[in-house]
Image (cartoon, rainbow, N blue to C red):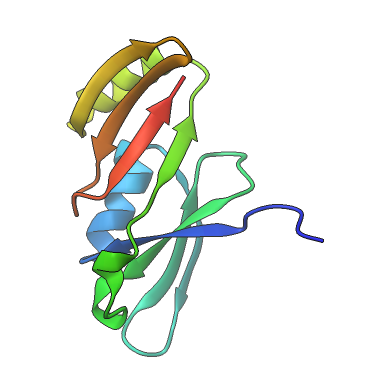
Length: 120
């Protein structure tokens, strides 16, 4: 029986730049940074205390990366506070903070223009 989602891949052009984005701007922790033996690394980052990690997977070795778009929603306890923190870190938003009947959300971009949802 499946207990949890272990990882979700995000396809990036520069693993080091992506690692910097997720650890320095998003304040995620580095879980794994291992050599894959082919000139790339297996890099996992995650929110502190989370069970599921994001794998920063190199686009160069995934020919159909553009067909494998990420669809990750990050749940946030205090979305307004974290939204302001993200703005102060220079994180770009495709859709600014909005309120809907089901809650608040915003859509942000990483340095490779992958889209992610922040939900409160």
